[in-house]
Amino acid sequence: MTVHIELSNTSTTAYDIAIDALPKLSFDTSVVIVTNPTVSGFHLDRLLSHIQADKLSVVTIPDGEEYKTLATVESILNECFEHKLDRKSLLIAFGGGVIGDMTGFTASLYQRGIDFIQIPTTLLSQVDASVGGKTGVNNSYGKNLIGAFYQPKAVYIDPFFLSTLPPREFASGIAEIIKMAVMFDRDYFDFLMSADFSDEAILKESIKRSVELKAWVVNQDEKEAGIRAVLNYGHTFGHVVENETLYKKYLHGEAVAIGIVMANALAIELGLMTNQEAEEIKQFLKRVSLPTDYIIKDVDDFYEHFFLDKKSAKGSIKFILPKGIGNHKIVSNIDESIVKKVLSSFGDDR
Image: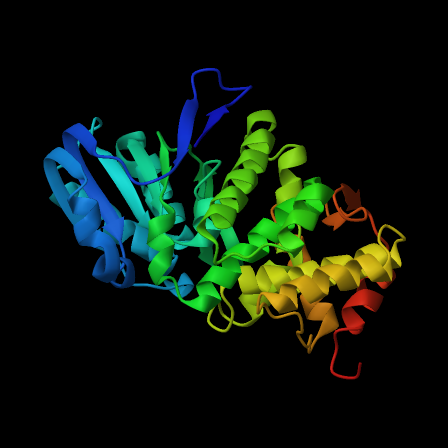
């Protein structure tokens, strides 16, 4: 299976997303693979057996969202200099979304930009993070606030790599799949509701459909000036949850699942979604072992974090909300009291 991305506003930028067994890859340049100890321990030998290059090196960085920082990017850059990469060299992101984001960002910086490809190894990165060219790092102010839009040259999605994925990581990826369905496709959501993700054919079809939806959005709006913002459903709330818990308590998809529940509560308050629809989504999240509860200890502080969201502009918070299941609405200028009323329903005294 192949999904093609051709950016409508950048006619020279196009690439394929291959969803199948990893092919043999040959490069007539220097290649550096960026990975972490967990992924390399399971799968590096297999990857190396599939790659031929003039010079091949591996850079291993610590595993975890807390290491998604400028300091780690600088360490990757230093390795690139040590290996004497030039502008024709290539980076390979071999891991989950954290590896992909940092490798892509490093590629955008090294000698003002070199090529990179994505070989994602988590479900979340296969269905979402590896597609579309968002790269970057976190800082104390929030998630992905430093970065660049920088497209890969290719994406190779091999479901085989999911065989060693821990259950929490797998469920984290399903959160992003659910996000796509709720925002864009009721029929897809209904398909997922009865899907057995342990069935390889069903899993592959789920990955393909999610990637197709992501590609369709990115083709229209590479730099999130319009419809691409819809892909942040659950993220405006989820990013605050991650920041409050120092990126250590929840995996990204788990925080997104909590954010989806919060976004749905706001949608109910605004009359965009019924209680029954919200409950249907919540029960689906629970069925795949994703968290749906979170206690907001300081509503005012939680609210203030929204203003650091990349979609906010001119002091107005932009919320991505479901309009039923299968449709969406971007809403700005919601009265502060309404938002805080919803946040209070997740407080200690609920």
